[in-house]
Length: 542
Image (cartoon, rainbow, N blue to C red; front, top):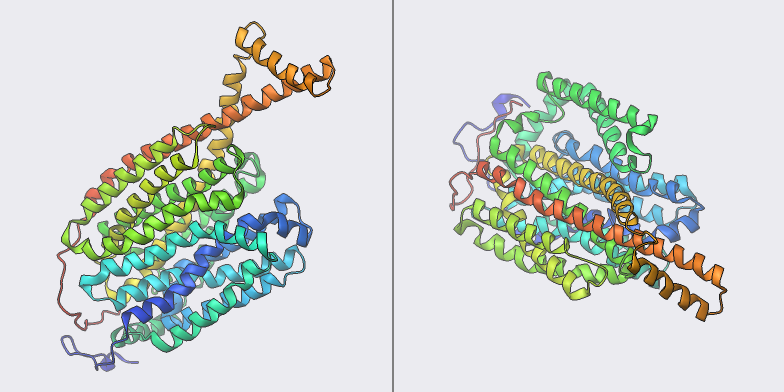
C-alpha cells in the first residue's frame, strides 16, 4: 500500500461497530489464564510424569525448561508477527498451537515427546499474554485503562497461584494427563470467542499493514537469530544453573557467554536495522523504562516468594502439596477482590501513591514471613500472604497502566511484548537467585548450629539422653539407640538451619521492596483524558 492510501492527518477513519469490551476481555483472558496456569501446574505432577515416561529427576525438569525457553523466545516477537500476519490472526494461531500442544502432552509416550510437546505449548503461550495486554489497552477508553490492566493483572497473577492447587487436585483424583487435557475445551471456547468478538481497530490495521510491508522488504533475520539464541541461552542458564553448580559447569559458562555476546549484538543490530524486529527505542521513554523495570523486579520477588513459601510449608511444616496450595489461596482471593476496585479508583489518585503503599504493604507481608519457625501455623501464614495479596493488587494495576501510558496505540504490541519478556526473565532470575541462596544459607546456618553441638554442653547431653531413652523404649539396644539419636539430632539441626535460611531470604525479599522505592519517582503519568478516543494519525516510521 502506498502512502497515498493513508488518511490525511486529522481525517477520521471509517467508523466501525465498537466491540463489547467485556466480551473482548473474556475472550482473550482464556488463553492468558491457561498459559499462566501451565507455567506452574506441571510442578506438582512431576512424580507421576517421571513414572509415566521413565525419566530421572534431572531429566523431567526439561518439561518446565522447554516450556520456559519457547515462551521467552516468542514474547518479544509478538509485535513483529502481528505486523506481518495481523494481531488477531497471531493470537488465534498461538492459541490453537497451545491447545494442540496441550492435547499432545496428554498423549506423550516418552520423555522426548513430552518435552517437544511442552515446547509447542510454550511457543503458543508466549504470544498470548502480551497480545491480550495490547488488545485490552486498545479496546478500553482512556479513562478505563486502570480497569483494563486490573483484568489483565488478575489473569497473569492468578494463573501461577492456582496452578499448583488445581494440579494437585487433578493428580490426586484423576490421571496426570488431565492437567493438559483440561486446556482443550477451554481453549476451543476461547478460540471461537476471539474469532467472533475481537476486532482490530482500523487505524491499527493500516499501521500494521504498512509496517508489515516494510518488514517484508527488510526482513531482520540477523536480529531474530541473535534474539532467539541469546534468550534461549539466558533462560537455560537461569533454569539449569543451580542444578549444574553454576559456573563450575562448562555448559553454563558457554551459555553465559552465548547469552552475553548474542544479546549485546542484538541490541546493536536493532538500533541500526532498517526495520528492527523488536523496537528497543521504546526504552527512550523514562516512564516506560522505569515502569517495566520495576514490574520485572516485583515479579522476580513475587515468583521467588511463591517458590519459597510452598517449599517451606511442605518440607519443614509437613504440608501436602494440596494443603500448601490451599493455604496460598487467600492471597489469590484478596487479589481477585481488590484489583477491580483499584482499577475503578485508579484515576482518582496519583499512581505513585498506589505503588508506594503497595510496596510497603507487600514488604510488610514478606517481613512477617521472616519470623516463621517450626511452630508456625496456618493462621500465621494466611495473615502474611493476605498482606502480600493486598499490596500486589495495589501495586500491579497502576504499575501496568502508567508504564504504557505514553506508548502510541500502534506501538502497544511492541511495548507489551517487551514488558512481558522482562517480567518472565525477572521471574526466572528471582527463582534462580533465591534457590541458589537457599542452598548456600542452609549449609551455612546448619554449620553454624552444629558448632554448638558439643558433648560438654548440658542441654546437648540431656537432649541425646531423651532421644536415646525413647529409642531404647522401642526395643533398641544402647549402641543402636545412641547412633539413631545422634542421626536424629543431626537431622533436627539441619532442619533448624533451613528455617534460618528461609527466614533470611524472606528478610532480604522484604528489604528489596524498600530498595526499589526510588524508581517510583520516575512514574509520572501524563495528564489523563476522559474524553472519547479519537482516531490517530499513523506514523509508520520505526
